Image: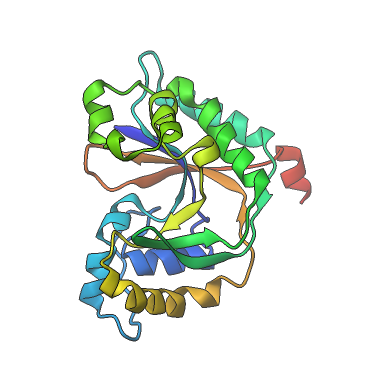
Length: 235
């Protein structure tokens, strides 16, 4: 079993619903969802292009998937996550927008957000004691030859290359695409997501996500609200 710490909107959120429909699976229930009808892109094409993010579910990664270190338990991880979440205030994000990152599409921030970068780095550091170190074979499976020097160092130190100064918030919506498909997929994504991207999202919780066996779909185990309990009750 592997665990990860992600941000994902709560299940009743309009963005969470739109993403579940687009990807074809609800990351909370694990159940399949019918893909949307969008102009210019067939249902079979949506299913093909979303196969990879459908397994991982709609999310932004803070602490990448990890096996528990020797001596650590799910209970101890949950207790630490609850305490940590209670010590961190929610972070209002800039507006999200559909954008391409390399050869895939996702939701990216319209501008930088230093408080979010700080939160992401804090999660990586706070929970690294729970992560079992990679074996050399696991390092090799992550294609380290394609990484920059800082990314390679992050992979060894933190278990993921795109953390700390290399972190860039994104919520993946497709797998790798061919250049000939970029425009049609982008038009379909904007048609589907633009109506729910008018409101600025808030990182108001951290999600503990589990992969119960290798290759299994990732599913939300529990949501942990950010902020002091007393403040949340008053609000």
